[in-house]
Length: 335
Ligand code: FCA
Image (cartoon, rainbow, N blue to C red; front, side, top):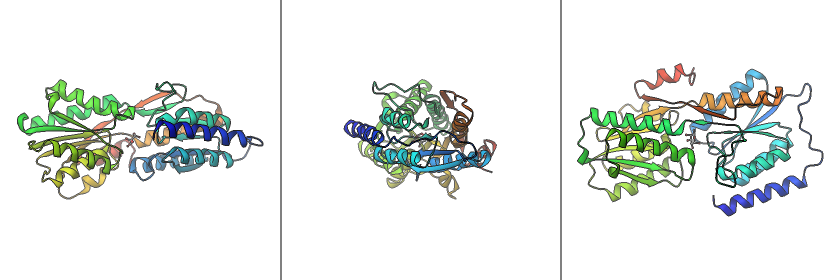
């Protein structure tokens, strides 16, 4: 989304809210069930579906209503906030479609007396800096990226690949800070381990889905046809899966590709395939914590006035197709 659109969304948000403030009273009242929204930027992505699933479990446990809304652009976020206010919601958890919408979202929520908790992607203020006054839970992006880099290097060594024949394909999305930190972490860990920085080929993906990863990887593959073996990494499973598909299109296989994602939900289908693919492993992160805990913290903030921690980073663990199921169970991600 461009700056103009973000600004326009801000103006519209302000305008709509001013016109509609009278009679808006959404303080918790006696016996009425508390309503909480959960807005995600890409509702079709398994990560976000699973966040919703765990948030719903939290709602069932505490007996509040959870309103799940997919909001893939500024206008949808705006409509969602209006909707939530109209339904008498008291707050919402949000992974915004553009982190620069932060100030507009906060202003809109404040006017409506809605509490905001940001998840996954931290809001940026007008100065381009993270908005530290909005509670946030995200992954420890740089560290998780580093884990991916270490694991890639280990596997590269284990297979005894020649460095002259190997390239690393970095599918980056630098406009989103959590994405940039992840892939930078991977690049750092790779080079610290001894992988030559000049053999890491970076392509920016336009979107953070499989298609985005596919297109970015294809541009790298076209530029470096001499590479015989590939390491692939990105900000999430989708990016790496897209990359692996692009490599398959050019004849690369599980023997000549080592792809390591970040996530653990989307790549389940990859791990379930009978024949292993180039998608070798993922850094499993916790949709349970991001879904359940954010909803719980917001609920307690509304109900009991308990201010949530302002900044929480969650950890990840590398899993392969062999270890992923057990780990997911251990972490409470599956029953
Ligand atoms: C971002 C990404 C998602 C997921 C999440 C933790 O929002 O877009 O794929 O990795 O962070």
